[in-house]
Image 1 (spheres, one colour):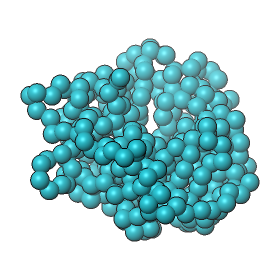
Image 2 (spheres, helix red, strand yellow; image 1 turned 60 degrees about the horizontal axis):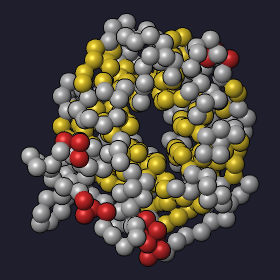
Image 3 (cartoon, helix red, strand yellow; image 1 turned 30 degrees about the vertical axis):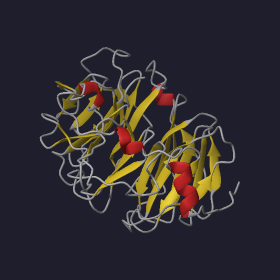
Image 4 (tube, one colour; image 1 turned 120 degrees about the vertical axis):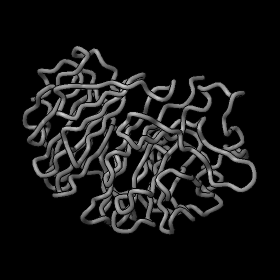
Length: 360
């Protein structure tokens, strides 16, 4: 089914995304002795020593009084494929933040200072083309965050867009998913869209293999993982090998760590489950906790060394450098539960960690 294309004016986008006439940055603060830790331990944390130590780097580049977004929760995080120092953080309720200095300082697009940015993707062939997801809409910037226009709107207002990924070989091709379980695709940079598969279960994540971009993985919320070898035309259910692991269908995170052999690492309610052949067979990693004993929130694998694996529970970061034979633990640098963990693709000593918003 094709969706009609439309573009909102700059004023309309600002009104929709900027909130009901208020500046969402009013409650941001620099932090200090008078501020409870829980109010300033969100935003972006960075480690330059593989998770041994962390620093909160959420400072806004502003004139006058210093401001930051350390009180904000983060829903999405992307590293520009062509520039590892260009970072994008989609917040919960407070719009988009971006840094061109590896998080040394952050800015916000004028139009995107409100709303929950559920997904961010940067064109691997043109760093000035950025896509973001807010609610049931997909927005695109073609001028390095200066302006944004809407390129997709889900017709069902109760259905939200949940993910977005760009084909690294042909960046005209974009995949997205939604809470209704649809995977939809554009071959013209978002001008038109076609639903390629309806899984009837919320889409949690979509991954495109950068070596062979015809291979696409779709992870559903609680009905397993599917693989397409032809750009979404047909799909294979990878659930058979997961049935032996109770809780494996309750999705937490998914990583493609060996593009050539299609190595997959699935974080689920069961724990961590690995495949070395594109999901044909699976085996569980031994963790410090028993099966179904770890509340895994996020996962990351070093693409330069697939034996270096990180995952996090609400209070603890776990790390292995030998593929799971031995694990070490570190206390998280925040009192909040984590949302995302990312490894710098150029310098794997550098990690980024984000957290949920404050509980009301």
